[in-house]
Amino acid sequence: MKNILKGINLVLGAIVLIVITTWTVTVLQAKTKIDRQEQIKVIEVIKNIDIPCQNLDALDLVEEILHWEMINDTLHIYTKKDSIRDEHERYRYIDSLYRADENAYDTWMENQ
Image 1 (tube, rainbow, N blue to C red):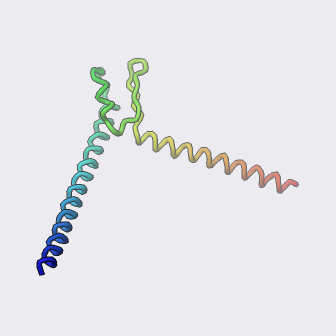
Image 2 (image 1 turned 45 degrees about the vertical axis):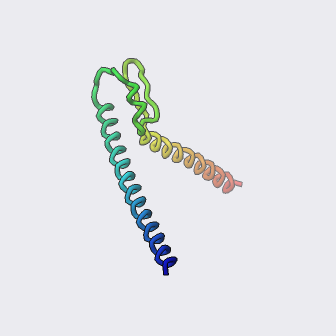
Image 3 (image 1 turned 90 degrees about the vertical axis):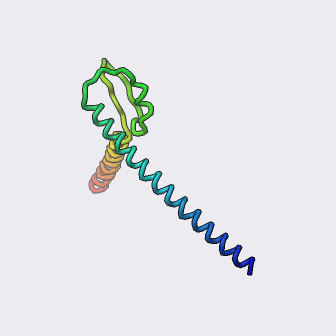
């Protein structure tokens, strides 16, 4: 009987541990999502406001910013959103090349 009670206590302890761990992970994921949204808002503000640059090293801490540089006193920021947009454009360009090649081949075959 004691062994059964120990087994039940062990199972209950494991269930409580799993519930607490799941809750903690959920809270941390929600906080990370909120932090990213705040970072995106900060990026938009930085892009739209003409402010003198004093501490640009702080931009290295923003996860959404992949690259930044100063060119002729203008701050240029490249973000994850920009990277995704560029990747879509690359895909559309490559796809258009394949389609053009297929169309040219089909036209050539029809003329043979």
